[in-house]
Image (cartoon, rainbow, N blue to C red):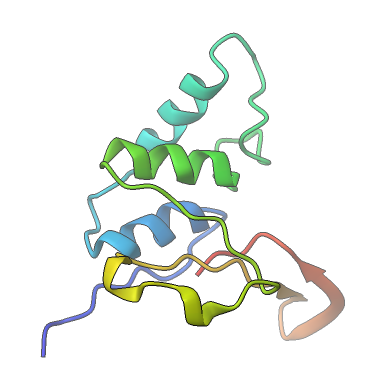
Length: 120
């Protein structure tokens, strides 16, 4: 069987890792590529609305993911749990990116809060 490429989550670069995992290529996208896409999406703004980290650490929004896919000739189809998955034509699907809530923790202590922006 072929090897499956998988980048583990590092910092707030979940969009980067998710995209590279979909394309099974660690060099499909870089942090700089996604930064350039942010700049292109909002060229005349000092602070881009397309990432939630002002430090350049990532945490990109779905608009960046969709624009990144378009640079490779792909498109995203928005889906949520209200729609029936049985109608997905999986033979036409290259990959899936899911946004799942994750627990916040401080060392070994889990906090009773949920984060929304974790992509797998």
